[in-house]
Length: 356
Ligand code: DAH
Image (spheres, helix red, strand yellow):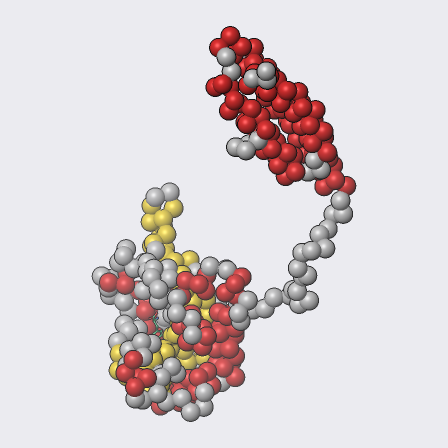
């Protein structure tokens, strides 16, 4: 009579031949793992035999159990050996393969890139002022307190000079000669006026730094600042130059208005607004978040150079007058390209930059 013990013994015998042949003919790791699952998996042959163990008479259990375990061990051994052979073959094939992959997407035919949207905005702004007769100046980003604040007639305790707003530069933990990361490019006015004689019309651009960080403020951002100083320079000239500038940048029929404002280094001071480029009067304006439904966008600060600034720079304020202005480049780029978050300008994410 063939009892469970015999059935298992026979099963092990036929299995022994089959799995070796199956493992040897498996051409890759997936096929090999499938062949192994047919033996050791839930529905595998060896698993089926194991289920018969309960029916094996007590006195034979030990021997039969040992035989099953032996085959199980062999299955693992042969499996691992074959796995190693397949892995080595795959690695060798990989090394001998062509060093390029024809299935990869092709390179763009135009990999030369383009200017960053901020650089473009900067060049456009400088070009307009250059065409109006301004020359382009330069100043450092690490600046003296004197050029950034004091000579521009900021009182010593002005809140802008506060630790909260300004990055003060320290060396070995000590404030060095009251040095800071310039908070505006207006410091270039001081450098020019200290070293050159009027008549002067100079514009400059570059990075500035403040302790600010949110959707519309970045600790580093960019400004253009300019001024014209000479005999009889008037507020009418300020209005003419800056209106022309705004219309060249935002379109010939952009509405422009001047609004009284305050900066320590000008008197009188003003801000220039342009009509909101995102909405029309009516329902759209009521919902416009960019101009906050006012219909106006702040574009730049300006004013007549304060006589104290001229005097601090050794220029006779009885003889000379001037106007000055400053604006954010980042804001120009954000308005132009409808960019809602200033921080993406500095992330260097190609998915963003490729859109310009
Ligand atoms: N420096 C000012 C700022 O950062 C902007 C500014 C206003 C510059 C008036 C000027 C000016 O030259 O005349 O907010």
